[in-house]
Image (cartoon, rainbow over all chains, first blue to last red; front, side):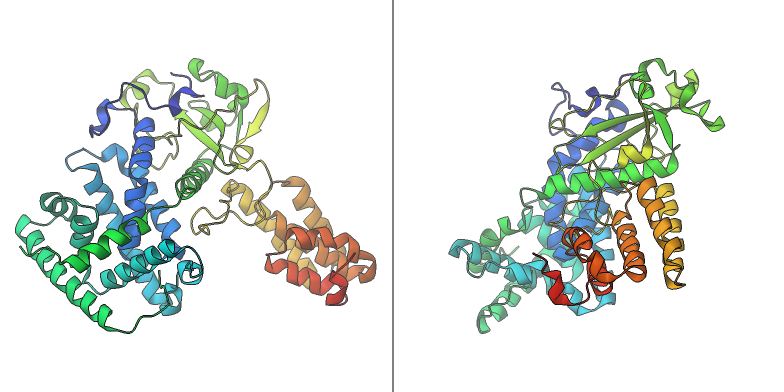
Amino acid sequence: MKAVVGDTIHTPASAPEGRIRAPADIEPIRDFSRIYDEHFAFVWRTARRLGVPDASLDDAVQEVFLVVHRQLAGFEGRASIKSWLFQIARRICADHRRALRRRGPHESLSEATFSAPADGPLDRLAQAEATALLHRLLESLDESKREVFVLVELEQMSIPEAAEALGIGLNTAYSRLRLARRDFERALSRARSMPPTREVTR
Amino acid sequence: MSELGKDARALIDAARSGDEPGPGDKQRLRAAIVSSLAATAAGASVPVVTKAAALEVAGSSLATVGGASLLKKALAVTLVAGALGGGWVATLKQESPSPTAASSAPQASPVDATNHGAPPLALPPSMPALEAEEGESISVESAVAPPSPPSRPAKPLGTDRRAEVPHPAAPTNLAEELAILKSAQSALRDGDFGRARALAEEHLSRFPRGALRLEAQATRWLARCASEPRHTLTREVKPFLDSAARSPLADKVREACVPDRADDRIP
């Protein structure tokens, strides 16, 4: 048996980057680390954009990676790793949103509500407000439209990739995206026509 | 298919990077995941191994680990002190000495016996390994315990984003800690302050790095302050109140031990 100390923590220099391999020909130790390193930001962003409040964000992301760890050996590489992660993340995010609804609206106030950099540099404030507005608009979309919108418009996946991640047909993906864009535009118009507010809800 | 309008596109471009994780988020979450997996592993594994075992993994000569069920198993604990905000990592590796079993299940989870097929925890290359010293006995408890005592019960899930990630004690120890504290608090409620204090001190001596250390300290102070003149303890209790300033326990102890709020401002 190989020594454990030290050498299991390194990603081998020879490991090809960006290729998802079946677990049989990889060392899972290294792969989990790689998945975490390469896709942490994707999972984090996804959780935020699928409506997990900041207060629950750590939990949700952690749960995703615990599931990944548990299921990695069974991952056959048929879907892309991002699709697989998204499938896990969307279930967990849905659970968190359900829990949030049960707890009541006061729980949806994220820490960003209180920590928005109102007196910080202008660009930070502008970005915080833009992000808050984006989240409000995403919140206004149906779940199914929101998911495809997030993947295509924000994660810049191709529509076939998004369809794969969502487990839906290509035509359905196109249709949902079209409706999502329309609803997003409408929600944006409504938001622009409303008086500005200083509150940042995410 | 219609594309997004200019305004919507501009908003998305402006907002996109606002969803990126912060610089510490990745490491903090990694530490939390490691803690969760280590806690799971500790709960599913045997409580004690030797550091020698960790060094003798290659030889699989781990019969000294102890416990009848372990005669057929080897358990290696690798301690890794990470640069993850003081995070400690335990990678537990379990293998069967049977050649057939070993060859047929090379990827069986080394972390969680119930976690079939899950890969062992991967650690970042940036984390330096802490070499175990041969012959020195360590327990899973110490493997998953942080280098400094946590101030709150372990909570791998539900951690505050910006708080340092606590590290869970082994579940068995947590149960023991809880049992002692329950008895202490029961004694406190019954007015048996001597017993409450003794139990709290027992907890503190048995679990100096316990997850419920803060609660034990608070219980000890509550017992003392109920049985001794409060003014004699005001100064003594101050370091605890300072160290637990953010804990609701501090308020309870302050209420019990400091005659007047003004006295809290001890010079």
